[in-house]
Image 1 (cartoon, helix red, strand yellow):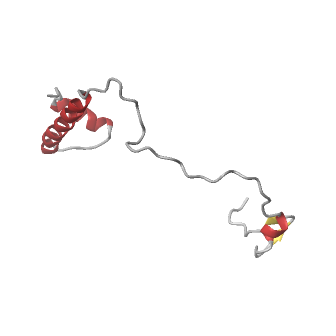
Image 2: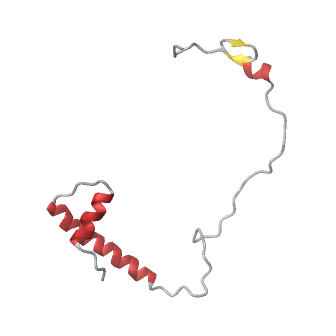
Image 3: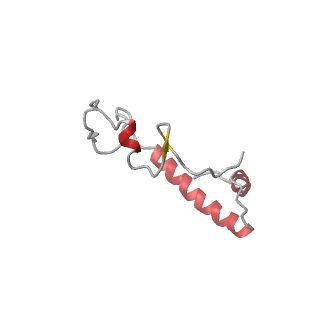
Amino acid sequence: MSTLSRDDVAHLAMLARIQLTEAELDRMLGELTVILDAVALVQQAPTEGVEPMSHPMPLTNVTRMDVVRPGLGAAAALSGAPEAEAGRFLVPRILEE
């Protein structure tokens, strides 16, 4: 059983910048105690010889080979632009200097 106190819950709430009423502090104490007890129970599981893993099922990342191929040239990229100037997209000014 966890040794969490009401003052601990109030301190955690203050760190998280959460305002709790007195009733909420009491309710949170009960809920956090249940959570901490569950974590303590899981920590008692025998894990000697168990290889750490990131996922319970073996996963294979399906990706294609990274093959270099030509991209759009400047003219092709600017061909659909409403306006262009000096090889760049021309957009309306929104900020004053």
